Image (cartoon, rainbow, N blue to C red; front, side, top):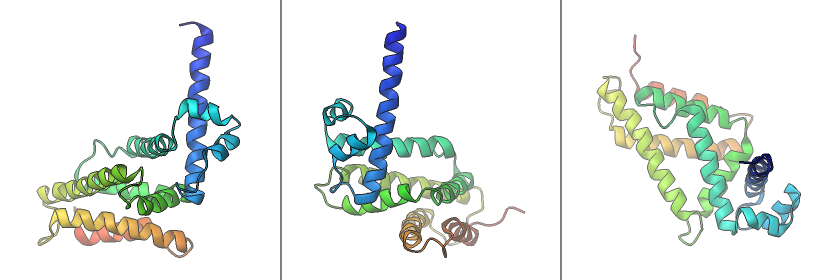
Length: 199
């Protein structure tokens, strides 16, 4: 491959990443429905047709933003290959990290609420994402149970669903009052109430 083609490919990837970053910010600020592709293009410093070259429709850009964020988080926190209590601990670590990026938290809160409408372009994404999240947490609690670390009488599947619901509720509370709530601390305390300490 020629140097010109390599540079062109690298520039294209960098521009695509910049579009994703600006779209993430705008979707978090105003929600998906109110966000404008023309405004995103302006922020990036390209034309509207230039943006459409990378993402031919607003729906494609939204899904790319959501998938990109999840891929980065899964890779950074090892969520795809961890199991049991270790997985649950890393999920709490991700929540602690999210407290450093309120725009991402707001994006997911706003879009997950908007996407409850069946005609929303991210509806299927969030249906699948919640199913994965609940199963991942339930799997973590099943792993704790198999290791003899889950407290007696606790259903791991119900605990997984409740843990996801707690995370979501905490995010909304935190967005409304960031100074008085430590999301990760609440989740750690919840895990401590469900998991037997390994002495």
